[in-house]
Image 1: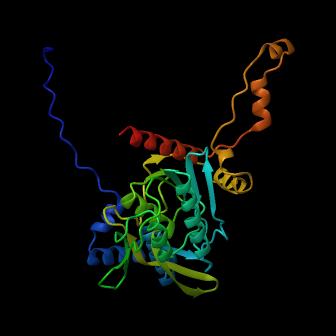
Image 2: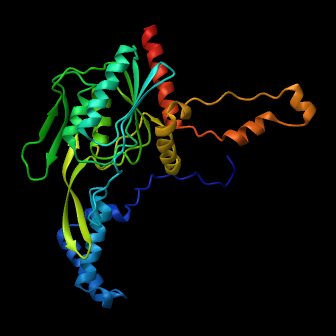
Image 3: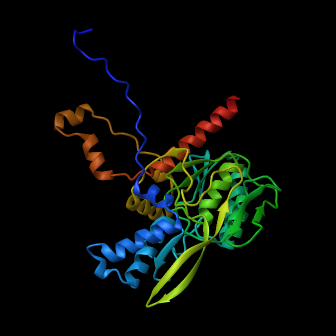
Amino acid sequence: MILGAQEPSPILSPTPAMDTVDRLKALNAEQLKQAIAAVREKHVECGTLDDTEMARSTLRGLLDGLYPGLDLTDGKEPSGGDAPFCAETLDGKVGYLRLGSPTPEHLAQLDKALGDFNAKNIGGVVLDLRATPESSDFAWAAQVGERFVPKDKILFALSRSGDKQEKKFTSSAASPFRGVMVVLADSQTAGAAEVIAAVLRANAHAMIVGATTSGRAVEFASIDLGGGHHLRYAVAEASVPGLPPLYPGGLEPDLEVPQDEQERETILAKSLEKGVAGFVFERGRVQMNEAALVAGTDPEIDAAEQSEQLIDRPLQRAVDLVTAIKLFRQRD
């Protein structure tokens, strides 16, 4: 010990400071009333804070606090257009399904595709929800879910504001497919599609690849405010037994694979024309050879410049995951 030095005093753990949001939640009705009165009477900009501005500030706070269950819109329903159904066998080993829009026709195509996969002994499937438009068609979500879930299982429940009893959706038929499942989802996966992903995780041991879903697993209502403005607000919330709430935080993936939104849209569109496999399996690498050395060229660079192959990384990882799970199950 150095002569004359003082013993260090024990460091006390400070209480973490409350942020503004936490402090706001801690205020009671009288404190809120007092705070608002002080702002309206004494703030430097109090002259601009009339009733309209105060109401606008209140609504702005609600929009921030209740997102994604509250929004101002132009009244048009979210739409991804008429998204087509797509089914393909990848490398003869993995089935690929893109549900598209929630229609009875696509359900029929799903049944046919599952029948084809079973006939070919395809024991693993990737279900792609990235191109499924946002929808509150929860009956359709239940119909999709029961294709992969045993009969008489509770798939999910819909709790409506003001109702004492929630509405439960149960699988009503034996599932035609019982193999390995991986689901592709991202931040645009919303509504019924988001519920499907959660149902399959909880009941079909499906793994989720991609990004956290939107958190909009709700049913919306809308009121016309006039002037082309509509208030869209959640009136019912979907929940899946055994999983954390989907609203408002969304469903987190088991394997996070980032993807640029523009790149995703390009790949989804082009794969309808050229097939999905071309965006999963990378072309063989061109090797340097003696002739290229003599000519002073580099075939690797030339090939890269000519191809510029787009790869669907989330789908590629999903296919790898299906293959790995099937392999481990066969060994067990």
